[in-house]
Amino acid sequence: MTRAAMKIGPVILFGPPGAGKGTQAKRIADKFGIPQISTGDLLRENVEKGTELGQNARQIMQRGELVPDRMVCDMVAERLKDGDCERGFILDGFPRTVTQAVWLDNYLVENTVFDNANGTGAAFVLRFVVEYNALLQRLTGRRTCPTCGRIYNVHTQPPRVAEVCDLDGSRLVTRKDDQEEVIAERLKAYEAQTLPLVEYYHKRNRLLEINGDQPVDVVTAEALRAIEHGNSL
Ligand code: AP5
Image (cartoon, rainbow, N blue to C red; front, side, top):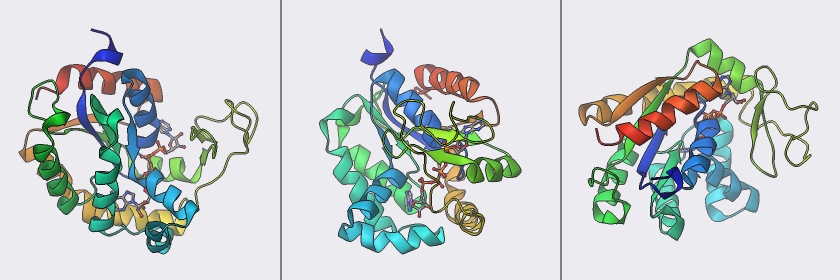
């Protein structure tokens, strides 16, 4: 069966800020022809458009804190109604608290349309493990294309022409929350509120770890293999 026809089910990419979730989510989504659902991107879109959700989330995100669970879960529920999620989807940056994880498990039980290869419909979690100093270097060097969303890094994955997207020529931007003080807050929020999910998923035998400190292509290859062969854990 080709990758584009496989039933993938829900896959969660898990890891601290800068672990490579967004980079890998785009590649995996592309390979399998399923959507990447990034709660960070959806929230930033709402901020940009000035929606009620965006207005409520803007300052919280600027401080590097987590947006309240209810707001994020409602936003994800809305997105999962779209028809493109039927064969599966890649969750990038969600869930981030135990409350969100419990909500997602219940949601998936109630919406059996998201059956995966083993027929349980439960989400399979890939955790990217990256050393702390590498995270700091990645986040301070990150640049993003505002048009196509491609992610670069001035240290490790620079564009061919400085500050210009290789794909569409747009001027690259630095995310507002990639300033050192905010990065420190985001990492603190990860340790306190998101890291407990490792135990949550480990206990349920749904967590697989990948060394995220390897070159991007190597991480992608390991993630694709894990999804193709590991989602019947
Ligand atoms: P979000 O946008 O999700 O940010 P994050 O989790 O902090 O993750 P990042 O996007 O910073 O990192 P990433 O792991 O995607 O790394 P990337 O691939 O870009 O969230 C932003 C905010 O929104 C949160 O702070 C919160 O306020 C709110 N929010 C979002 N979701 C929420 C939720 N569920 N609940 C509550 N609030 C929520 O890579 C980083 C850099 O490293 C890039 O430059 C890349 O080129 C480079 N890189 C990637 N892989 C490698 C590699 N293997 N080797 C070398 N460099 C690499």
